Each structure stands twice: as structure tokens, then as C-alpha cells.
Image 1 (tube, helix red, strand yellow):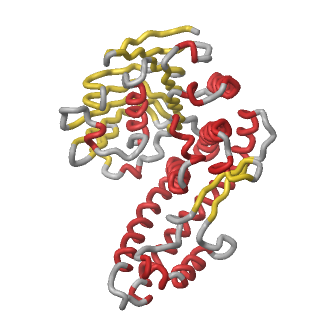
Image 2 (tube, rainbow, N blue to C red):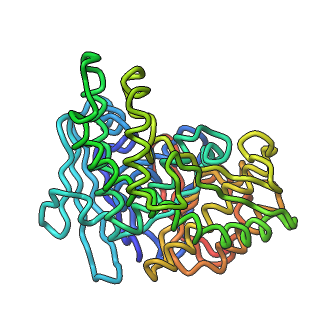
Image 3 (tube, helix red, strand yellow):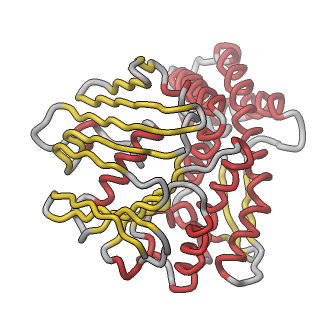
Length: 366
């Protein structure tokens, strides 16, 4: 899969710009606050149909404008695609090859992109919610059914919670229909999460040892509020009944995949508490490399890589490992940096130098 070109209009710091990309390595160079990360985010938006994180439209649309547009040309296994995205104050319109896509879930796995951002250390050191969202995002990128079930689950959960805030006369039979839905859909969400964790565990272990050079055992653990050693759907129903009185007092549902936890360990110690900054960065890097292998395993594809200011987050050994990986990587790469000296990639590079909102393109042989 290759992103051939990208045209932006009123997207963050770009009023009007067109980029033509190299099939292998693209380097986005500039000082801080010049719009390097904005370009990566535009690429992510185009391929994943959403920015890096949840943003309001006014945070994406250039100041003083009412709408922004993105247009991209992509060569993929499915053929040549043209994507157009229009974002205004009210909604987002997506067109794929001139046809409006009303449900992005139908095309959510058409393209695959893996990002490595400075904030990815939060996957290791941040909250349980951050890790839960990260796990779901990876699964959604390879299985659209997971995205569908997450939406259905959140809808049923919202309905059940709305009933729980009603007067104390509420009885179990009045909420039973939502318990049935939560258990049926939620059990599928849990099963996919557990299956994926079991698949990625040996890959993550192998890659962490390669990046760190240390023989440390990496654990990835899924902790559920539901008994995973029996029929999950039935256990979910039983647990909802058991916690009904407690849920009434708290006005929300206290069991289910929305409460489950994903955690990592290094040499059997909780990485969110005991890992050093270096270990956490290394684990985040290993996770991102593992994503590439998972996409290859599940879909038989090579994703596009987006790497934002990576050299500032890694020590020299890990930087060397990363660039060895990039040298062997067969897909398309986008890297932001403040200096060419930090880039160890050897070969043909297309450089985009951004200064004072002016983009200058130049091909480089390193």
C-alpha cells in the first residue's frame, strides 16, 4: 500500500498544499511548531478516517475557516483509490472513488497505518483506559466486527446506566433485556481481546528482547471482571445479576469489558509502576513493531509507518535498532525530525522541509 499524493485545504496549519510522496521513505524536516506533526496527522486522518486522538472540528479546521478538505491517492492491493474527506462544523463526509461512504466501519480495514508518537509511552505508564483503547484500536484495524460490537455495547451500556439512575423501585426484571444484550455483545468483545493478547504475547516478548538486548520476560495480561475460565456470556449475565444492587447504588454498571484492564510486566513487575523511562519507551517501541507483525499475520499486508520525532524518545542503541528495522521494512515510511543528522536511514529519501508555513521538496540520497 502506497500513499502517492495528498492535498490539504484549511487543515490545521496548511491553508493549501499538495504533496507527492516517495514509495519508500519520506522525511518531514523542520523546527518545532512548523506543522510536521500536522502533516502526519493528515496522513493518519486520510488512511484511518480519524485523527490521532478525538478532536473537535474547530481543532482540525484552520483558524478563520469553516471547513477543511483532504484528498489522497492510494495504490493498494485493491487497486488505485482516491479518497476525499470534507470536515465542517456539523459533520464529516467521506468519498471513496467518488462514492459517499455513509458508514466508515465498512471501510475501516481497507488501509492500515501504524504510528509511533512521543506520547505512546502512555500506553505503558498511563491509565487503564488508555491501554484498553489502544487494544481495541489495534483489533478494530484488523477486524471491523470489533468496531461494530464496541458501538453496540456502548449503546446498550448507556441504556442500562440510564435505567439505573431511576428511583430505587427499579427491579431486576426491568433491566433484564439490557443484561441480555450486554452479555451477548460484551462476551464477543472480551473473546477477541483475549485472543489477540494471546497472539501478540510471544511476538512482543521476542521484539522487546531484540530492541533492549536484555533477557527480560515481558508479560501482557488481560484482567476481566468476568470469569474467563467458563462460558463468558453466562458468567457475564450471572455477574450482572450479582452486582445489580451495587450498580443501583452507584448508578452505573460495574462489570463488563468497559471495566476490564490490560497491563504489562517486565520481569514480573508491573510496568506502569516499576518500569524506568527507558524500559517504558522500549516497551512502547516493541509494541508498535509488534503491531506491524500482527497486521501481516491477520491481513497479509504491510502497513504504512508514521514516526513522529522518534529520535528524541530513544537512546542510541534503540535508535540503531529502529533504523535497522526501517531499512529492512518493505512498506512506505514517514518520519518527522528537526535535523537530518538524526536520521540513519540509507537510501533514497524524499525530503519535505517546512519553514514559516512554506514547504520545499527535495529528493535526497543518503
